[in-house]
Image 1 (cartoon, rainbow, N blue to C red):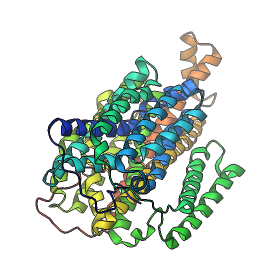
Image 2 (cartoon, rainbow, N blue to C red; image 1 turned 60 degrees about the vertical axis):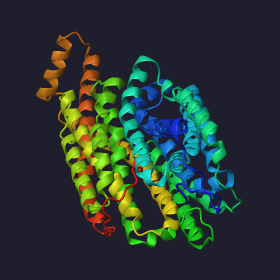
Image 3 (cartoon, helix red, strand yellow; image 1 turned 45 degrees about the vertical axis):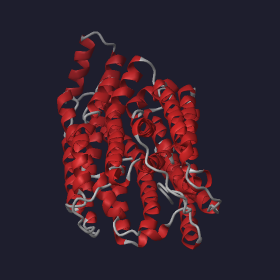
Length: 524
């Protein structure tokens, strides 16, 4: 599995770009990366609008997020093979153009089923874009300026999560949610055009290699079955449904066959032997669980704000956007110091900050004002800056240079898959806990209970019919139930982040290299 492979042959490396070509090349690659990362966050605040327009529940609307994530994760392992088969420049340009096409189709989708199908296509073609943008960017700069190139690339991936919720919210409220996909069309066409004009004479060498088609088919089978089971489980009452049981069986058997095949295949699509390394095992496991927790909560918060606190998509986006402010300020420092400081201490600090943020959110009530919701989001930016780079450094530490692309690709695959699954688990648990809290609250509001009778009397005195008063009371109970449920998820997530701290210390510290540049990428 390769994240950003270069040509396999011994062909001469092209000379670095200069002047206007370097500036335009950097701009084009950054635009494509920005568009890709933006698409993973821009839809979060638009989910209620998408679900409402397409006539589905908000929990079904989250499939728009998870389908993209799973498809994106599955396509990552193919990057290395496709690059060596077609060349980095052709593959990157076609990935961007197909991403534009898929985005345009997403905007036109009249049903949830078609939207999910086009999001799957979008995720599949997006896989090679980010690693290849790094590859082409590094080939554009002299080796001495590699750190500068990666810092520029890394800032792009940090700015997009700030812009995503703001832009997505404004577009949803003032135009239509379809335009969160349509805006990719001009950006993508511009990025593809500039990239092809500058880099087409800098194509990487190609060669025909065997592909592990059986391993790829098994990967798609078990990951797809598991994600479908998580997405549809709540709707179908979990293992009381034959469909959910069948999906679980397919996922388990598919995973078992996948393990057996990949461990014996000469050219595996996923090099599972990497997990034999102590740092890779514990680093990738910790990174993936933490990312699943983080991403699940990132999707949950704007849904709660819009469904139960009356926020518009714009205001929900404003509540989410500050997460990138401290990240943008602190990430250059982290990138500079990760080779000097102990990355295990940095990751530990990140997890403690995440736990603090989620504990603060677990105390949210329906009476919280905008500022009190904003403060934890702002703090979370500091946690993010000390999260990705140190954990990626720990995960890849000790790998021989020839194995680093495969290790980076496998780590990204596991992380992105965990993010999609974290979203499904978080939204399912939210619904389940809300049902439990609703039942508990209703027990105290039966007819004849003074509080319930007084509330109904005041509503009817205000002009509501008895049926309307009961419906309004049920709405208030549901609002409290879903708020208590989201608090439960936040508190449990905070506890899990603290439990992850010892796992970080199961890794070995990489050798200290004063002044060594660190990869600024890794946030996406």
